[in-house]
Image (cartoon, rainbow, N blue to C red; front, side, top):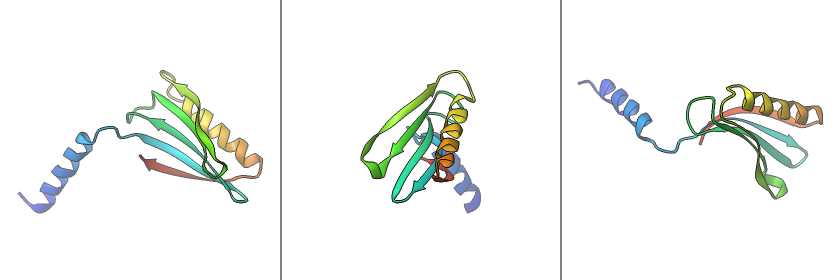
Amino acid sequence: MSLKSHSIKLLITACFIVPGTTYADAWSCSSSNNVREVHIERSTAEAVPCDVVYKKHTEGVEDQVLWSAQNNDSYCDEKAEGLVAKLEANGWVCTETISEQ
């Protein structure tokens, strides 16, 4: 077996073994010295269940789950994108990131 083939098999195996991985779409928004983050957190690679989490790291505020969905595939995406649009309308500069936690 070639080294490349072996490496690919190890990588695929590792993807199925890693427990507790959460997939999240995220935005980082800044205004002055403040940074806020909006995350769509999912416990699986599926669209639901999901939570929209709002983080105000620089303001000393605890993370808040603003919305959750169990069945509606687009609910968290729509809510998160709406919140980001509202922040941008109020002068925040937001950058979308895709992260794996």
